[in-house]
Image (cartoon, rainbow, N blue to C red; front, side, top):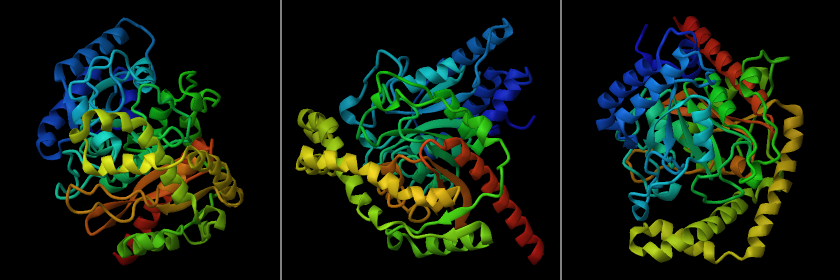
Length: 451
């Protein structure tokens, strides 16, 4: 067998279930990869190798005893350090929370444990999942940012330290790091995964997402996380779709994609423009350029209103208490949020439904919307984690998004983002698998034509 650290989530789970690989062997391989890459990448804020190995050995023992195993049995997963873990610190990337020890797991962590996953450790996040960058570097080129705020999770998966990790998105913090690091990511439909036990930033926007090495990996991880939770009012009434089953099915017909530039196209880099336009053109009749309805022009403003108001509500008390320990940029955001009236906030939340309805005619004609995942490849330097320019609309409307590592610009990855209707996460993943296979075939054909 090749290095187990290179296995994807689904493949590793199958090998462990078949008795062809032990969790201890997989975790040991991942720890060796971490020892090799961590000095350069710095993806982890907490890692206890003995704790990880103890979990793996206990998992192997349960399997040897013939006990029922879960869908992620023995697979190590990195956890963004804003999600509570009872046996590890959760410091939220914030000096004021240094040494913080939760007494119980977040619901998403509990769900992973129930599925048999190994909680490998806590990955670096930006300060309170906002803009002030952490220590993590992009594994593709350490001189560039890995993105934010799920920087450590995306970097750990790209560096082969773990096959899967969790992130969260309030603006673009799942999709953008995946684009910068060149990995797969899913931001599911809003409310599909419980946020209980996760640091809140903006209640109508916060969404837990998954990182992996394939579309199948994203589906496997999400399936283990999806479920109702009475403690999170936004996820109590959602059904439990089986994303893996849908994702692995063949499309009932050849999918059609709508290429959407969005009104913020001018805020992207020219090299991103050229890459996305070329990619859309290469799909031929399968992809048609479509303009967004005028009803969506103000969506970016409403998204910012909801996000800043949430920061003032959730981070205002921290700003008052810790003062100098909070970065000037976040302190400013809290102050801006405090200037927003509750009436304006309620209007921003209500407008989500109007914006979502405006997308319906596009989704009635097309299987998914093709858009940029980021304004360009990862910016050079570590202080700026990038902008959520091409993510905010989809976060605001609560639709599912998938990022595929299909493009490269100047030696750096650039993701392709697909979005689908709310609740259609399975069909979106299915379309994403089709697009990835189609893109690879086009690439092979192009090489053959020039070779």
